Structure formats: C-alpha cells, structure tokens
Image 1 (cartoon, rainbow, N blue to C red):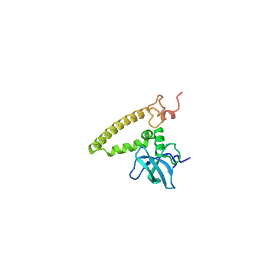
Image 2: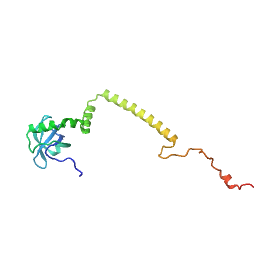
Image 3: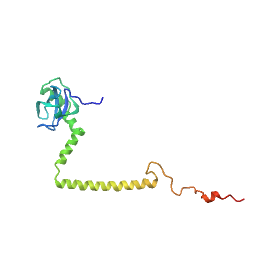
Image 4: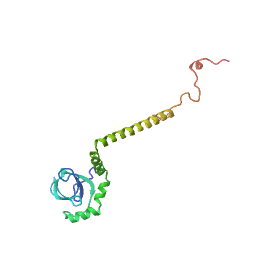
Length: 166
C-alpha cells in the first residue's frame, strides 16, 4: 500500500501555516474533505478547525474516541509519549538543525566554513592515499591486475620464429 499516513481521528500532525506554525496537533474529528478539528493540549494549540493544506501528517497516531474532549486527548497524548517520540524523529531533528543554523552569527558561519574546509582537505588527502595504495596493489578498478614484469619471462617474438638447432 503506497500511503501510510491517513487523515483519521488521532493522527498527529505538524501545523505548516498560520499562527501555530511548527506546533504538533492531533486530529480530533474530520469536518469535511478539506477541514479537520484539531487539538494540541500539550503544545498550547486550542481546539479549532484547520484546513488540511495547513497540516503535515506525521507517522504518529494516538487512540482516543471520536470527538473526544481535550482532557481525553491530553491523557492519550501523555500515555503515548508523543512529544518524546517526535523529538527523537529525524523530521524534528532537521527542523531543530535548521533553526540552529538560522541563529548563527557571521563569525559562527565563518568558523563553520573554515572547519568544513579543513575537514574536506583531510578527507581528500586520505582518499588520494588510499587510491594510490589500491592502484599499486592492483585493486583500483575491482579486479586484480597482473604485476608488471611477471614471474615468468615471456618469449620474444624473434626467438619463437627461429627454428631450433640440432
């Protein structure tokens, strides 16, 4: 099945637009094809309706009855440890990294650029050394090459044409 995240009661979503942008909410009820009733008891998002194009659905889902009260949603939210699960997710880590990058000063960006430059220099030098060593060993292109000068001397073409003397 190609789709894993459905608009359903209990689905946790991230608000992507509006005054609560970036906050987690849970879908409490589906109003119609384009709107849902959401509640974010632990993220200070009041129960309200949002358009589906203002939400990004996550993989998390909590169980509570259809059109449950905020108290029930909060209890289910805490029991399923949604906040902790969200903070461990790659998605949340990317958002945190983006926010951290936005807070950098000019000097921090300069230091970061210098550190990346040093790292890339070290990486390039070690890669070239490994490539040179594998070329010498004959494993550069995945198959072992015959060593130059081999163990057995090859007969020359002139020696092969001359008849042997009796």
